[in-house]
Image (tube, rainbow, N blue to C red; front, side, top):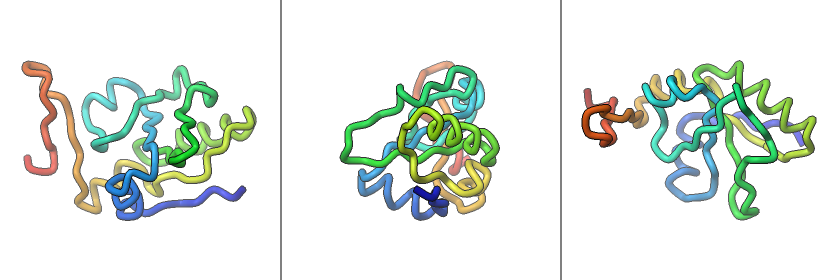
Length: 118
C-alpha cells in the first residue's frame, strides 16, 4: 500500500472528525516542548510498531518534527507487517507554518498551554 502524504489541514480535519490516531515519533523532550493536540507519543528511541493503536476504526497517521524519523518509523512498520498508510507531510514544522494549534505543558501547573496564542 503506498504511503499517503496528508497536508496539515487534512490531518486537522481527520483529527476533528475522530477518524485517525495521530502518532508523534519524536522524543519525549521534544513532545513536551511542542505537540499537536490529540497526538500520542511513540518515540523513535523505543519505537515498536506492534504497540501502535489498532482499533480498526481509525487509521494511524505518523508525524515528527520534519519527516525524517517518520520515514524510519514507516519502514519499521512495513518490516513488522503493521499497516500504516499515512503521515503528516512536513511534520510539526509544516503544521506550525499552517497556523494550526500547538500545545505544551506548563511545568508549574501541568496544564496545557496553547503555543499558537503566545
